Length: 70
Figure 1 (tube, one colour):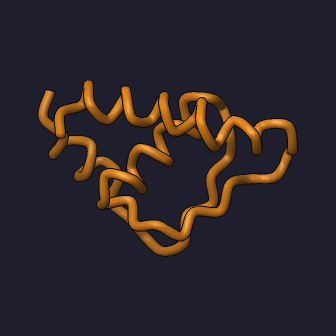
Figure 2 (cartoon, rainbow, N blue to C red):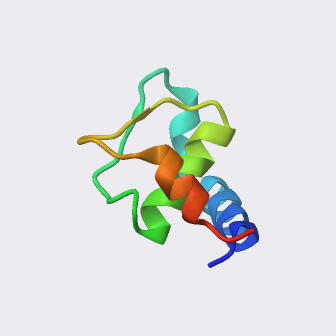
């Protein structure tokens, strides 16, 4: 996937599902792996719409961002 594909998927995921959680102040609890396209798109959707995300575990975000083709 390219970065453009991920942005489109993240936008679609926000519109179809995650925007329903935007009315509350609580964070979105993610149980999916950030290294998968679904996990990363979910993270991007929440982050770009200023929704807090709780991610269990430790992930090297800078390494993952650098690996996405532009």
